[in-house]
Length: 275
Length: 289
Image 1 (tube, chains in turn red, brown):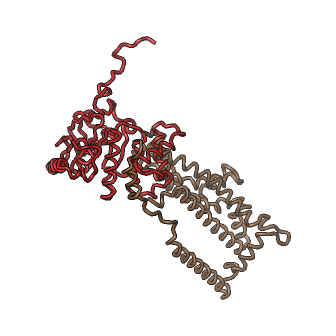
Image 2 (cartoon, chains in turn blue, yellow):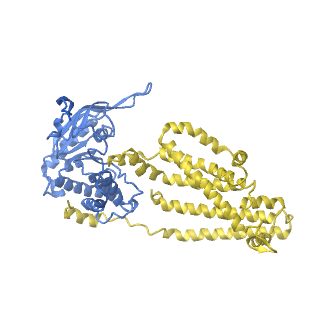
C-alpha cells in the first residue's frame, strides 16, 4: 500500500495521552428559539472545564442552573449550541465513552434484574457464554448478589438504582456520568448508596461526573466540586475536596472539621449562585 | 472486583426487598362474591324469560322458550330422524368453521396491522400517507365492502377471509402506531446509554413497551372480527354459525336463531378472556407499572 502523506493520517489528539478525560471549552447551550417569534433560553454557559482521569467531580447548583444539561452534553445526548465538548478526545456519543446513571433507574420492566445487566453486556460486545458470570459479578459489586432472577417490581427503589449502577458499569467504560441518581430515594437509602458509591469509586478509580443539588452529597462524594450559578449556568466555584478517600468511616468523615468547612464554603457559594 | 464486606453486610440486612404480595389473595373473597352475584343475576334473567313464556305475552315464534332453545341445542348437536345437526353439520361444527375463519382472517389482519402500525409509528411520512387510509377503512361497515369482495373473489372462502382481515387490520394498526410512536424517551435514552444502535433500540425498548397496547388492539380486532363474521356469512355462509342464523331466520326458527346468538356470544367471551390472560402473561409488568 502506498504511503500516504503524513497530513492524511488522523493526528492522535493530545487528550488521548494523559490529557483530560472530559474537556469542555466555551460551551453554551440554548433551548428553543427556532420557530418564528419563539424566544430562546440560554440554559448554560459559557463554561470551560477539564476533568482529569481518576477525578470524582460533583456538579452542584440551584435548580435550572444547567448542571443536568452539562451532563447530557458530556453524555452526547445533546450537542452544544456553541463551544466544544470532547470525551477521551472524541465527540461524545451515548453508549460510546461513558456509563450513565439517571435520576430514575430507567430499568426495562420486561426484563429481569439480571437480563437488564445482561443486555448492557451484550451491547458492550461481551460474548453470550460469559454474560451470566459477569452479570453475577456486577450485581455482587453493587451489593445485590442473588437477585438476577427477580422482576424489577419485586425489588425496592434503592435496589433498582443499584441495578442501574451495575448496568452503567457493565460497559466497562472509564467514565461514569451520574445525574442526581439518589435524589428520588428516601434519606436512609440515599446515605447507604452514597457510602457504597464512595467505596466502589475509591476502589476502581473510575473518573466520574456526578450532578446533585445537595451540598452534603458534593462534599461527601467528590474529589472536586464545581458550583454552577443560576441560569445561564456558569462556574461560580471550583474547589478540590481533599478528604481521605479510604479508611475513614462515613460518620468519622462527616465529623472532620475540614468537612464542615467545605460544606460551609460550598453552601455559601450555592446560595450566592441562586441569587 | 468484589464488594467490600462492609457494603455486603449492610446491604444484606438493610436493603431487604419489600415483601412481595403473595398472588392476589386479599382480592379472592371479593372475587368470589362478584362471581356469585353474576350467577344470581343470570338465574334471575332465566327465570324472567321463563315467566314471559308462561304468561304467554308473545307468540313462541317471536320469543322461543328456554326449553325450545335447549331442544334446538340437542337437535343441532346430534343426529335426529336421520338428519345430522343443522343442514348436515352439528352446532359445534358450524361454530368451529366460523372460528377457523375468524382465526385465519383476523389473524392475517392482525399481522398486517402490526406491520403497518410499526411503519407508521417509526416513519413519519408513512404515517402521513397511511393514516387517512386506515381511518377511512375503519369507518366502513364490513357489510359495505363485502359486496365488492364478492365481485372480486366469488362466494367461497376468499371473500369471507378478506372481510375479516380488512375489519381486523385498522384497530391493530392504530394501536401499534400510537404505542410505537410514544415509546418512553427515558427508556430509549437508557438503551442508547448502554450502546444500543437504532435497530436495537426498536427491539429492546420500542416493541416491548408497545406490547401491552398492541395486545389491546388485538383484542379489539378479534372483537370486531367476531361481530363481522355474521356479515361475512350472509352469502353462502353454510356451514358456519352466521350462516346457520341466517338460514334459520328464513324459516322463522327463532329457537335456532337464539341458540346461534348464544353460541357466538359465549365463544366470543371465552376468546376475549383467553386473550386477556395471554396479555397478562406476555406483559406482566403492566400490572406493576
